[in-house]
Image 1 (spheres, rainbow, N blue to C red):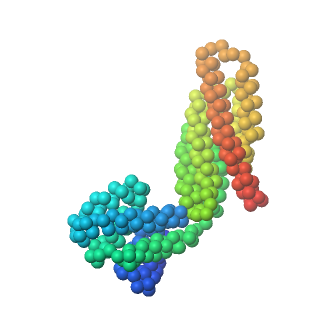
Image 2: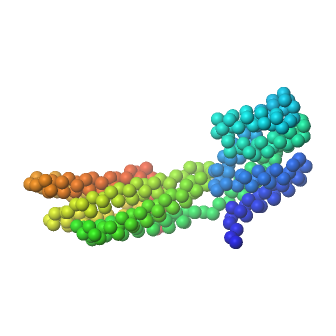
Image 3: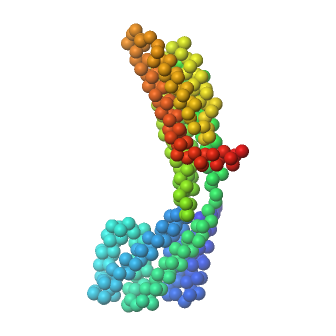
Length: 328
């Protein structure tokens, strides 16, 4: 049986919440522990927002319960009317996460048979202790930045290998089928990295660092374009005198493919190859024409493939430079 860090934090925060609520002489101290259990989330930001929303939800629940219980009495029917009013109100105000917890605390009013400022303060303190301990436990989160950098290196290595093999197997369609499988594997790696990047971004309470999330989004777009390039290469036959240009273009890209490369040099090389094709004599047959058109489309896709990285590099120049200094 494996006990994860989140389980440990949940158990500890619940126990401490109950001890703290009992030490303050609060009624129903166990409720603070249950609230803490429900408030230990996967990230710092989600725990913080959960706490805020649940406090707002409790304020709304207390106001509606006060009206229902004082008009209809402290009865199960009054509690039912309270739920009929509170649930849609909480949903409309985006406070649905606090419906269950707030309603459990409202039952304390129902059981007591009265609502006083002291009892209201008791319920709010139970909520504050529960969500506060959960947030305190979540202030410690394992640093996943090392994992993200490792994912970047693996993904870039796969990109380089696919581009290298595209150059090697040009005009050999049967060889390209295995590259489609590797493209699918590449997308799976990117999806996994994107999940880690989301957690990393959500764990930044005082800043909003979306660099890694943007990075994996960029690589995801590139992987889709790369697969489209492969589909075209399956159909296109590159003229023997032009094979060298395309091979050198793919080979150079595979050799220089990295986080630090802004793509400008590659874009210049693609434009140069594109101009060579534009200056060639017009095709004399329909088959040549269709083949030339698809080759142009391939170059346009190639250009888009690198352009995505160029845009990312422009938007994240400082971060990329910082990462390069760290690696150096």
